[in-house]
Length: 72
Image (tube, rainbow, N blue to C red; front, side):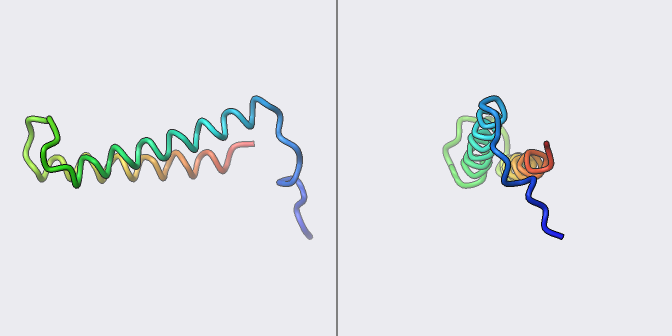
């Protein structure tokens, strides 16, 4: 059977939260990529730690995106 529940019209609150969630996904990905690839990032920590923080932020962004998709 086909599930047509996904095609229902969203309320303005749900639409706003979806857009906000997508914006936060892009924000966390950009910050993670900046931590990895920006050499002159003003953090006083070593490069391996910057890479670890960047990877963590990117993984966190995808976890948030997956949880955003599972919400009603």
